[in-house]
Length: 471
Image 1 (tube, rainbow, N blue to C red):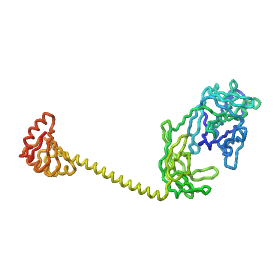
Image 2 (cartoon, rainbow, N blue to C red; image 1 turned 90 degrees about the vertical axis):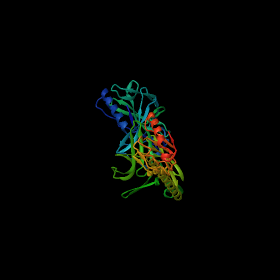
Image 3 (tube, rainbow, N blue to C red; image 1 turned 180 degrees about the horizontal axis):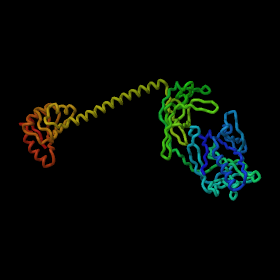
Image 4 (tube, one colour; image 1 turned 120 degrees about the vertical axis):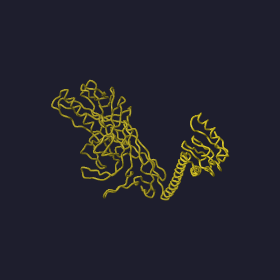
């Protein structure tokens, strides 16, 4: 059986509470009636919450003013109204190592996380009572339901309620003892014990969270506040939300994103936005929440009082945390930073322009260095040379190279793939050039060797206008 319990978010604000359940009357005392009564009590106890406890009782223990208040749908709580429906009667310890895992649940659109406790067979609870120590073991009944029962007496059992994190950072549960009363023909509540869980394994169903933006700049003069006359910088003044006549300050700005990564591979993105919240008592208002569809969450933040300079802020939800940076700077520092950022942006822009120009030139040079048309003229060669090319390739389609085509260019190497050149078609083509080498690449090794011999006869100083090496 999985016991669902409301999580109390941060250790120093977490609470001690239990809910006293009314007894359930039944007309008969058969074993099936008792089993149904037990199941009904356990089910109702399991669904109770949320839990709260006033900070005035911080550190309270059984025996002093460990006042525990029961909250239900009709209850409310404020600083002036304390609930003192009862105190827990005894302390106890949990023997075993249960699994405690986080789970999501929503109420009226608010997504919160709870803790589930999953006892293991053989786990037990020992309670120090006025009768002495009583032990209850995690046992399965004939209907397959699991309870902490007193061995050999299934009518003496504990209803587990309200898994919490206590002020001393330990997990604890409230256990209510129920006994069957034959005269009343019902289970009656005997006492309540606070049970400390010493060993447990944690299973968090959220693997990580991330917050965007990761870096925020705030102007000191805009967020200064005072406490007892002492100035400090308030993160709550980061953003002002306005809706209708409503206006409020917030740590978060519209559009901030909180991404939740679950261990089952699901990812949810919650975006900060204004939300109209309705209450039954007509005390409606606007607030900003992190929203995903109809669900909203509000993460915990570790610190809202900032110092001048860099501040690392921790944001927590579902038992996991992430950080983002807040830099508090003066107006003058902001102006200097913006100017520096603009300078760097301009440098980056120019560098990018230069990179693109170089890429374009390289592409143009590659294109210009490969000439594959019937007649090669001086402008073809000059175009390649002007782009810094020193080596060009004449394709298989080339039949003629105009006189003085290479004159005044920087081309030093020419690769020839054409088989169509003749002495007449290359006459005077190399005159006044810097060409030193002509490479013959017309086909396979045999073909190349054949045309090397042919082109040695036509690319001569007498015919082409300059002596070159033919390879």
